[in-house]
Length: 63
Ligand code: FES
Image 1 (tube, protein in one colour):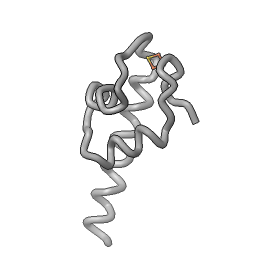
Image 2: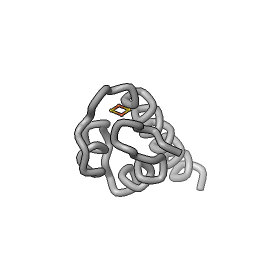
Image 3: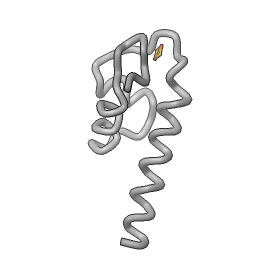
């Protein structure tokens, strides 16, 4: 699914960038080799980062 329409970034690419240690929207753009355009995707990317980090934290805590 495309999260960033302007740059054709998919949720899978964003997941991969998060898994590689990128922790901010700006870092995600850089990791994907793009620059932000309209910025509409920023909130969704932020939500994805927070959700993945929370899930990873729960895995560490509860296995
Ligand atoms: S949708 Fe990502 S910059 Fe426009």
